[in-house]
Image (tube, rainbow over all chains, first blue to last red; front, side, top):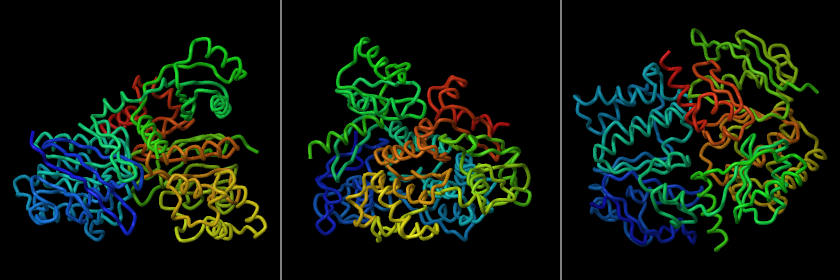
Length: 309
Length: 245
């Protein structure tokens, strides 16, 4: 496999604050690679540096064999980038914005109609194509921005939280487009706050405090969750949560509307559950094994990091 | 106090020929966390604006905390809190100054503001941060404080319009802890979100498509009804179905 992106000991320091503090990894050609992490972890800084918009303080970034410090224009030629806040032309219509970006990226006329139709299908913006971009709702603006970024197919596509504020169905359809762009051979690096999107990537890197604390395929990351996790139901969930919080050997409690998720250091015995049912005064009604989600693992890994600091 | 916080029947809003909200009937109970889901442009914001007394309905009926949407919209405004992803505290004011500022806007007197401030900061375990700049707070806490600030005037309902867009999972969980505290005090929480895991946090959810409510139930009942594993898949299924009709 050839390497599309290679990040070697990359550091970016603002004043005395290290936004990214020594990160090394590589993304293979044709890979769909996800970047997740809490706000302020350094995701956007890393992305902007890969797009030649920031100079590293130290280390290097190699994009398709070219150095981001020296081959800036050549890199920009093969790279598509969608920033977190995209600047659309508010006083152009939906259609004019799309045509403008198609012109800018020299999309051949013969491909245009087909591509526009596909993008309209995912964005459901066709019936709004005469509307000014400035008059769209927030989520629709984001979908238009995405469509503009996807109007051409660069060799490497870098997207910074592209689905911010986009509804679940459009998100799913957007990811179907991403997958088909990947199948056409493009390499994609995408950051996201939606954990179900992280699960659609080939590999995911979890960033925290300027470092990468985990990098693996999603199913491998999910298998790392070490604690037995249960979903409990009952009467007064807030009271039930406080009850579990005060028990020994509880790792985490989390309310999920009409249910409570509890993780334990060790698997409780049937006797434990019966005892708790009595002790909770009937608040605990039933419990069942629950498979950890990407989010559970994300929080677990970050808590491990905080403890180690 | 009435046990029904929001009640609408056939509520409709048209802009010219465009029907943004089409015959919507819902009941939301006191202390309920009600999730209001839908595609971008489905009419969620229009619905919330009507319920907040900011927009007159075209037809249909509606009451918020027992007050009529047509005749008592000014009184409704005093009874509700509103927060969106765009509602932001001033980063360059301290926590204390932000609370003073918004307390003033809600017309509270300085003694009340001081009392509420101490209570709010204690509830959020932010008392040590009182004189720190708001911009230095971690995002989840900032959202929690923004919500607390939107409730300084003791509303009976809060409307949260995508309060966690762009907020990471750990911050979102911290924020939801504040929502649960709020609801357990009997305050109704009406929340829109595009995070389907958050939809699972709600007591009941409704799903809106082109102005209409196409599903309304407890998250677990919806999963069972459509035999699908997650609310994400229920949402996608219903939206696809709605768009082929």
